[in-house]
Image (tube, rainbow, N blue to C red; front, side, top):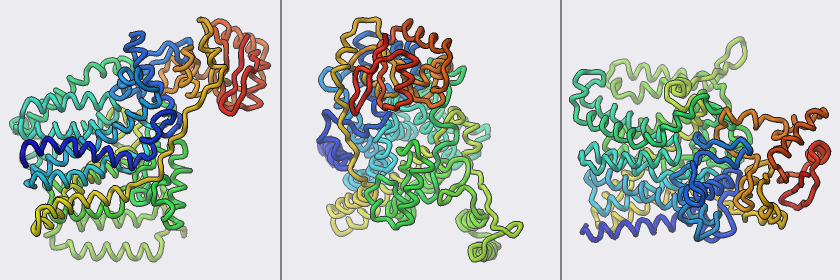
Length: 630
């Protein structure tokens, strides 16, 4: 391939992923203005992020990680919040030229295009390093990149989580990491450090993911040469390069890490999930989620399983259900391993290991966390069959036959204890992991480890496409490239979803003009994140702040009776003493709360606002109810 063609490939790949991203996120590209992808609570928060970053860095320069006009009058800290500066900084550049919802859609859509491109760069390098020709490597890398980019994980999170949709930094980091280990050139060291910083500024957990991946990769590479705990380890050039990479990445991440550490104690409160919430089920790897295009064609039991996952395990976070790996896509990985993949066992081990971590603290099968001990028997039999070191043992066949018989008997007649079928909980490695690795004991979301499984799967699928293309190229080189490209159809078809939900943004009634034009000091009491989003229009301080983690300094405000009542907490509407009434009214007057804006009308709340707080309803429609305080 000529240098010119290698350069031309890059815009072609970008255009390809633009088209594929438009297909998978349709109708987003046709509704960029006046509509917003997803339309859920976090989407309003992320639009506000774009606006706030422009306010804090350009309009009125100030610390972007402290917002004086949220949680008014206290202010809100955003240090441990999912602000995703690497993505929301685009608000500074884009908002002068487009509406905030258009800017949000552009940034979100751009993440798909960039993730596809950076995945392609990584996979093309791995394929060329393995000896595949440049044309075949480019085509096969496209197939593998589709696995990672258009995975159900990516598509489901795109409906709400801008920070988790920003995957483009992970494959780019790994490209720089591998090239630094292979070549030792300074530009790759600088690249991996900058990529680590970029990943950190997208999502803190993703930095831990790539750090863990890098560590495991280097340990496995070291074991090929000798024991890790040895005096000779430091003499290994690869270990030295890995240490330099860790230092470089650490130094690059120091500026944002310092304020994080300074605000880590007392630890921010987890208000949305704990350390073990949101984990996947064994069946969920192979049964699509409810937003998959395959949902309607599934057998009744499979549909019921997906619906129950949504209702039970992910009832408050539907975006976490994207753990489907596919049916033919994993078979492509098996084909690649059969044909041969450099470090194939390592990629397989990493993929399976992170899949196990994604299952959380206890094994769940069919939404049951108590299972028959036959699962343990089957796992032991599988280990005996697959562990390479045991393949030549004289006892291997006898033990396998005995275990197979035990599994058959346990399946034909349930194992019992005290005359009832025995069900046990099987602890998973995440139980220990979350206490060893920083951050995860404070809210680890184990289900998201499936992302690294998908990364490993994308590598194996790329090699499967390369092997298929190499076989076809025996007849004609162009046919080989075409076959490798055709493999990309499999993940694109298996991972396709229903049309994305792209609702219109609310049209604010004229009462918001009154709020906007009111002279300061004036503030707005409100009930949810839409009230925070409306701040972009009226510019007044609001009582609400949607935060990923609640700083301890703000917990008393959030738990006060006035704020709980404003946000519709039912335990706030009991009998109010005259002293409490006077105190709440004094608080409203002292801090200049002139309006209460609620997005859910309820008679009990209405009575509380009018009788106890002295509010007067001045507007009501299908979107909002507004009260004015004296």
